[in-house]
Length: 87
Image 1 (spheres, rainbow, N blue to C red):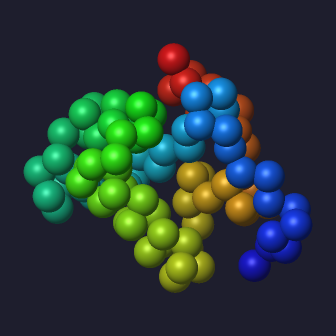
Image 2 (tube, rainbow, N blue to C red):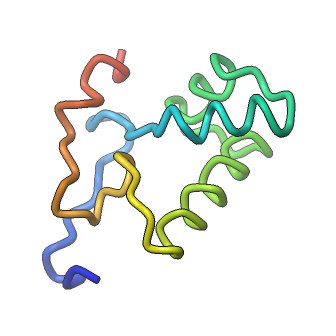
């Protein structure tokens, strides 16, 4: 696990929100949640069941030690991958 002192995080409303499309696919397939609506909720930092579900699934992936492009603590994290979603 990376050192917390190296973790800079993201600034909501300024930095692009990292979204793992695999999680969106899972939410759609398993729970019938519209992927575009889920993306919109996450990007808008909505505090609803859609965003909560996404972040719980993301946390579960990270906790298992699996790779996800949305893990901002990973040394492989590249914010440039998400610039197009910050609009």
